[in-house]
Image 1: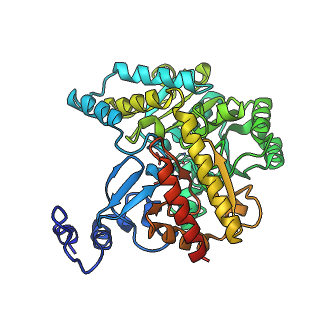
Image 2: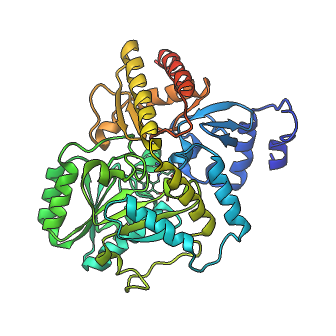
Image 3: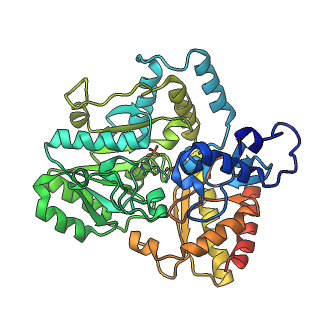
Length: 444
Ligand code: KE4
């Protein structure tokens, strides 16, 4: 089916298509895009059914091309913390675009955004802007290896740091969803230096580092694991990583692409009072446009070219339209009361889900961390990836569709996160919790 056929009459009153428009659009998309999407988790493989094609979004809501309206808790996987199409962000983007969309030359806005990051994010003394979280983590690990002269890196099972070869080992998020513990196409040699330990297992880290400590360039961790579902660090875990890495001359990297400006305004480092050597950022940082960063200790970051010898570059790094969106987003987010209000909404939603499950006698574990939250259909608390994978993911899939039919759009995978925004109002949360109660009863 051609794209034209699939989207026939889209601009007019919806024609009576043999399929829903999303189904037709998905069929057309699969003719030209691998799996019909540009990022695997969007394909609904984990929950089944047809992905809804989004036509537009505003505030806390999105509308699909069939005209269905949803309260959105995906928020583009985190970036839209002010809500979709916030007027001030749209204006900033428009005004920047009117001055030219890319120059490939330094601009004042890049310095301004880096100054804001340095103010908000502990450890961010120097900042390098890039275009995606993957680019940020890939570069931060190259930097750690360059700065230490060492080759091994340690990550945690179920943590996802983007799709760079060296990190696609027991990754979370879409890899977890697809059940691809190691992706084909990644040469063994590339992952030979990637060590993996269970999240929240400090003893395992100490044992691994005791064996190869003087070869470990860095330990990279999501300070709140949010790509296996949401799993908080147990008390002492992050502090332990800080101690072990310092003792062995390895760098501690907090991958805050998702948790940055989300679990606290200053990210996990601020929330837990543990300062890493390097930090990666993204999502909220770009306000929904392609922008990410790696940052950290001045002495380490000065290894990055052209200040130092470690090469990394990018045509659209620090893009003026993306930096304008990021500056506008962070300016509003840091206004008094804004972040705490979103945090309170996340707390209310997570507590409401837990209460509804208890009332329905459904075993559920929930987590609230700043402006995000998560839940598992599980009898016992989830502390790591093994626990997360033993939760009832099939029930999650049924629950997802029961919510979607009631106009609530949560992540189409158990191994993701609930995101709140400044735009979600009490009425949205009331409607959501009403849908949750009904969906829990339906999705047994
Ligand atoms: P991107 O390359 O997708 O901008 O960032 C990769 C990345 C790095 N680090 C963390 C902690 C991340 O969560 C991510 C990306 N997050 C997923 C959702 N959990 C992106 C969604 C997708 O892959 O489509």
